[in-house]
Figure 1: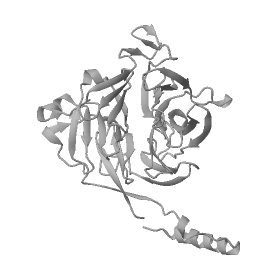
Figure 2 (figure 1 turned 90 degrees about the horizontal axis):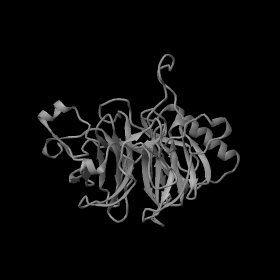
Figure 3 (figure 1 turned 135 degrees about the vertical axis):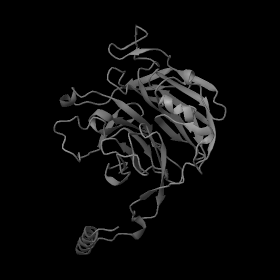
Figure 4 (figure 1 turned 60 degrees about the vertical axis):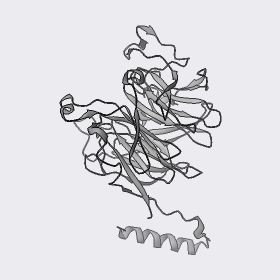
Length: 364
C-alpha cells in the first residue's frame, strides 16, 4: 500500500528538478524491489518423515539448486514419530528434495556455512571442529579438507591441549567460506566467537596458506572484539566481512587492504533497559544480488530479525522484508543463512526456526 508521504516526497522532488532544470532519463529509474513469501516452497512434507534440527547455513549453486546444512540437534522424543534428516539436503528450483547425504562424524559439528562452486563442489564449514571441507555435490565424496578435526578450548586457544598456530591453514572456530572464481583461492572467516583466531585467512587451491588479516579497528575501537561471522567475495574483487560485534560490514580488497565500513543500524522496539539488548548483531550473514553488477547486498539483521537490502556501493537501505521474530510464515526465528538464485529470489535458513523459506522477487 502506498502511503500519503510517498506522494508528497515525489511531488517535492519533481518541483526541485523543474526549478533546477535537470534532465532525468526514465531509463535510469530504479523501482524499489519487492519480495513476497512463496508458501509452496519447499515442497512438503519432506521425504521419509524427516525432522530437521537447526539450519546452520545454506547456499545456492549455478543451477539454482539450494543446499541446507542441518545440524541435526533435534528433541530426542520427537524421533518417536520421525526420522532424523541427513546433514546435507538439496532442493531443486521447484522446492523438491533431489539429494541428501553426509556423515555427521566426518562433516564435524556446528555446521555454519557453505559455498557451491562452479564445478559442482560444495564447500562446508564446521565451526565446532574447525574444518573446511570440499565435497562432490552429486556423490557426497570428500575431496579436500582444510584444518584438523579436534577439541577446541576457547578459554586458552588450544586444540587438544596444543597451542594453535594462527599463521597457517588451521582454523579455530571458522564461520564462513567463499572462493575467488578467478584464482581459485579460498577465503575463510576464521573466529566467529571470542577466543577464536579472529582473522580472515586465504589458502590456495592446494591447501597452502597464503595470507591473513584481521578486522580493522581504530584507536577508539581497540576494546571491541573482532568477530568475522560471514565472508563473501564479490565479482569485482572485494571481500565483504560481517563485523558482527560492531553492527557493520567491513570491505577489503583481495590482499586485505581496508576499503570502507558499511554500517547496519537498528532501533530496539522494547526499551533495552534492564535486559541484554543488541547482542545478536545487525550484520550476521550476507549475499549479493544476482545481477551482473551485484548492486545489492542482502543482509540478515538478527537484531531487527529482518533481511535488509542495501546498495552495495553506498550502503543505503533500499528495502527490507521478513516480519520477525516469530514462527509463522514470513517471520524468522534466529535466521542464520541466506542465498540468492539467478532470478533474484531470496532464501533464508533459520537456526532456531529450523526451516528454510523462499521470498520471490516480484514487480513493485
